[in-house]
Amino acid sequence: MSEDKVMEKLVSLCKRRGFIFRSSDIYGGLESTYDYGPLGVELKNNVKQLWWRDVVTSRSDVVGMDASILMNPKVWEASGHLSEFHDPMVDCKNCKARFRADHIDLDKNCPTCGVQDWTEARQFNLMLKTHYGPSEDSSSVIYLRPETAQGIFVNFANAQSTARMKLPFGVAQIGKAFRNEITTGNFLFRSREFEQMEMEFFVHPDETGNWLEYWSDSRLAWYKNLGIREDRLKLRPHGDDELAHYAAACFDVEYEFPFGWSELEGIAERGTFDLDQHAKHSGKKLTWFDSKNNEHITPAVVEASAGVDRTVLTILVDAYHEEEVKGENRVVLRLSPKVAPTTVAVFPLVNRDSMPEIAEKIVESLRGDFAAFFDAGGSIGRRYRRQDEAGTPYGVTVDSDTLEDQTVTVRERDTMAQERVAMDQLPAYFRDKIR
Ligand code: GAP
Image (cartoon, rainbow, N blue to C red; front, side, top):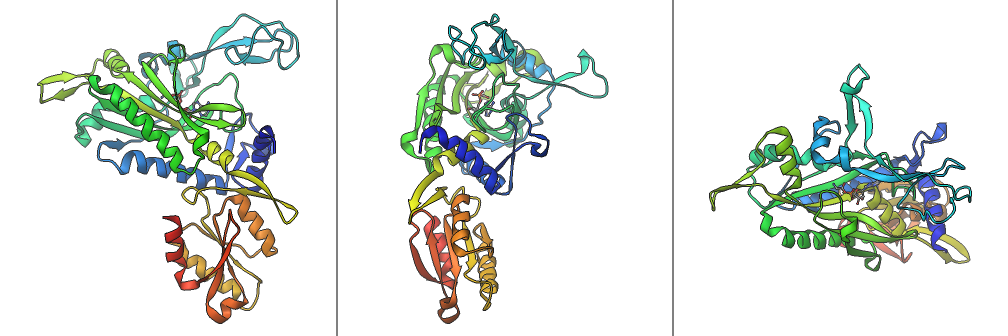
């Protein structure tokens, strides 16, 4: 299967199986905006939970928080987003199509109409604006946050003092961010509304290099641990010309998508830029008292900034497989049990002889520990195929032998190997497999 077909097929599978739909689909959608369906929201929640566990709850040096999307507009003045957060934009004078000037070759013809007649490149600010309160004048303009990070910086003193954190320590949050991207595309990869998982790690300014290396390695390892193929993941250092306005050094975690190697996450050394700026603009002290050396210091920041939707896309792209089985095409999502929306699907072979009741009892016995699902609709082959496309790692079938010996067939999604397992051993069996 050609690589460029993968995205097309994935989009179609996501809709067919209830992972991801176009937003406002019944009205023709809204360009590059997506809704997560019943399976998609489980996958996405699993990603967020695994991140939170890895970055926050499994550690003693990181705490979490959840800031508002809407913030005082002075935040964006201080952070530099009002003056610096823009991309260069050009228009085709002939067909009026609009592009990011750094994403296309201006010596070539317009990819939409084939004519070469460009406007001058000009800077376009990416923040989405709205009005706060009932009056729509310049005094009520506010912005939807373009990154969650600033919610952490402005709460630095609140989080540090209430959680009594000592350097080095981190503050993490997951939440929506919005950018009025000039061009969007590649499904979930670049949209105007997305979710970020960000962690700001506050360190002594002399120690940023070590922590940048530590968090870069740790974050790359997290993606590998999700079951994403290792040869498609890498860390790439930024060149000086690519660094954001606040960053002194940066590594990107990249994945080899069908459309090329692209960024999943940035791990950046932000220095004292953000705390200095907010201290200056707010007039508040944003320092930490180093009791060992008896001095107040402004901590430097190492940031790990990941995209929830890009991670979901990566997991889906990486898991998508097609193969021929007995002359038929089998589509299978090889999702790791850690992220799969359903872990075990349970089927009665036929809808009689108390098989459905036994299958439902099995679902109930598994539900406490696993995402278990009952399906009695259609032929067993069809039900297997549906679960293969949903990425469900295990299928359990109750058949006539079950009535005799209380065993069931367990089918493994990727190998399609089947074995008999005693019904009462199923929770231990899956615990052992999924450990
Ligand atoms: N606080 C730093 C920051 O926001 P960024 O590299 O601009 O850095 C971090 O964004 C991550 O957020 C990206 O690596 C990506 O995963 C995600 N992201 C950024 N823009 C996005 C967009 N338009 N659509 C989807 N995800 C996006």
